[in-house]
Image (tube, rainbow, N blue to C red; front, side, top):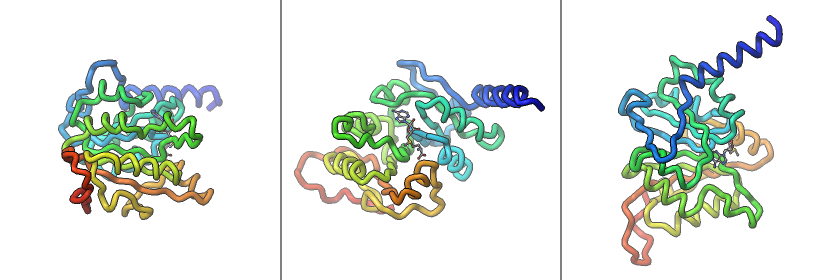
Length: 230
Ligand SMILES: C[S@@+](CC[C@H](N)C(=O)[O-])C[C@H]1O[C@@H](n2cnc3c(N)ncnc32)[C@H](O)[C@@H]1O
């Protein structure tokens, strides 16, 4: 087959996958997940899927949850679509979107069981810190879209960003740490992403941060009684 025909075939395949797996966001209109997935399974949201290793792999292992992966980079969306198989990944959808505080306009309140953010861009220069995804306003949004006791998992190899994230959680009473809040030990069955592997080869190992949505605590100045184990 000529190179041109091969490319045409790949394009056709991607477009077919797009019609099955990609959903569109309409400003001000909330997704109806039951309609989208055709079932009532809980939804896991991954923000910044990159090449899709976690989304594609974890959704297969964990077929009792529905998975929604959001990514702003179109090439990475295409890369991910190519790996999705209609018969095996019926619990997966992808969305091409720049995630910010407006997420609440698309995702219904209380509809997400777990949010995963794997190696978010660290924006290391101080003058760019305000571009970091993890800010109090964005945590307010995640709090709203999470179910009661929903989980937020963030993984980063950037030590200063890890401290920034933990500091933000320490300043809030509406998220409680799971397993002490952060660990360097991955869970059993952990899926290593492209970025994680790249960073580990450079000698930068990730921190795994996990918090759970809890009822806001009255302002007492005391931080005890929040820690949990899982
Ligand atoms: C450092 S990469 C990590 C990718 C992947 N999670 C991994 O571990 O290999 C960060 C990813 O998040 C995406 N991203 C960054 N900011 C985003 C935003 N506001 N909305 C959606 N995607 C975003 C980038 O395009 C990129 O693919």
